[in-house]
Image (cartoon, rainbow, N blue to C red; front, side, top):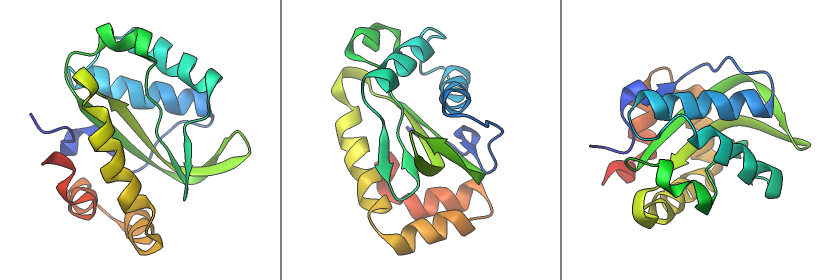
Length: 143
């Protein structure tokens, strides 16, 4: 199974707050069969401990180590927001939820960080019109 399928990409998220955005990211992971519903609690706990804001309009919420038993398979959810969300004083337009089975999230995190470190790639993601365009920009995320 690819970590990111078109069905796990939302081009226009509905959340208005950081907590709602984390819930939205988690719900996609649950629907994909990657995590148990309880994973959301661990994502919220992680956010309380340390902000998952990464820069360049990106936040990557993920669960704590205590929540790893609620992960069924490695997967991502990708949600873009038309209006920036307030993420602890930072503007976020992309929320990428991560579930990493058996430590598989570190490589995925690295790939996402590389894409988002490039302002041109971020601009392409802001302009993308379809989930397939997003997947093309994210490149080898599923390799």
